[in-house]
Length: 124
DNA sequence: TTTCTTACA
DNA sequence: TGTAAGTA
Image (tube, rainbow, N blue to C red; front, side):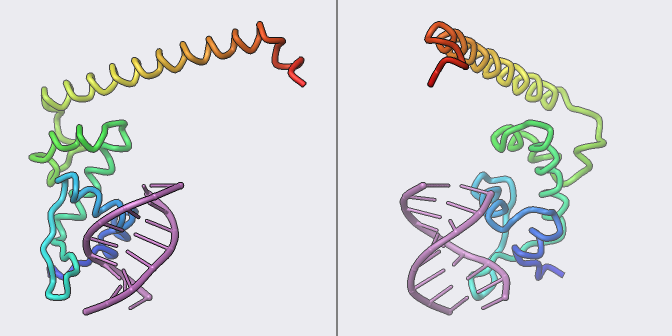
């Protein structure tokens, strides 16, 4: 019952083999090798990947998810939030707000530059 | 057919 | 993340 290959896990979690290798590279999941070199996974990997996908969907980065490694085999979505988890989420939110502010600023500059250059309608 | 690694877009 | 290449 540990003869699950990458394609199986991908299908069971709605991801792609490419993403799974990427998660492994990031140290989020592990795998063993069959004699032919193919990766072999245990069923717990499916739960793990679903949790990873959940955290990514909520807005965290792969790097953030690494901090959740201890909880990755449980019910990350339902379990009571840990202090560290909340900290990471708050930091990610702050980072997003920073990026948003920076983007808004460059957008406003481009907008006004375009306006003083003749306006959106008088460009051709 | 599926998977593997590496590398580029 | 997708895709290409050449394998096993």
